[in-house]
Length: 295
Image (cartoon, rainbow, N blue to C red):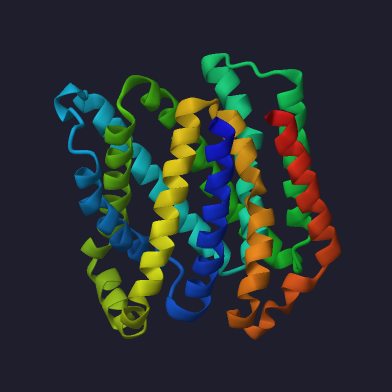
């Protein structure tokens, strides 16, 4: 069952990646504004979530664990800041591939910190997925953009590794809904925090002319984002974080396919999407084999 949720998540992540790239290229004046707009959109889910599970016993939750969940949300949002900047350098499919540094780092960190050991087949599957995602990264069209994207996505991935490890422990100790809601709270609060700075607040306000007409667009992105986040966290609760992260390396393949569908609305310079197209599809097939190995 964990694999089902782990594969739903990258599909929704792919939707988010493609639409986020459109926002960075055509709507947002600066990439970091994506953090604020996503926090505002997350606020809708933040308000609605308690009504979805009124029977949850909040009194049973430990304050320390709620605070730790809040910290996880902050780490995820900080990671998003690096991710949005990376999107300004490379196409969505390439940026999605760089997220696959997570399964390279996560099994090592999980073993060193918690002594987690996987099967030979699962380790082989992780290697296959990392190889496939690395190959996808090398298909980037400019060395300069590759370096800029790599540097930003390394920090984004490292923050996500910490978040994954903390979530894995939190879901063993606290109710899923309470943990998820606390994480969303951290995402919203940390995402809106930059507005406390006057210069950023003015810059964001001046961009509202372009942002307001796209509010429904941002809402769609956030719905996909919440579904992806919820599916990923349910997969972590049911399975091993390292295997979940490995399954999510299929996101670049989903992103590539969705980018093709979206191509007519993407910027004209996005002809690079078709560069090495056959190779990208072959890499996508390799990812499917890797998922089979870890299942």
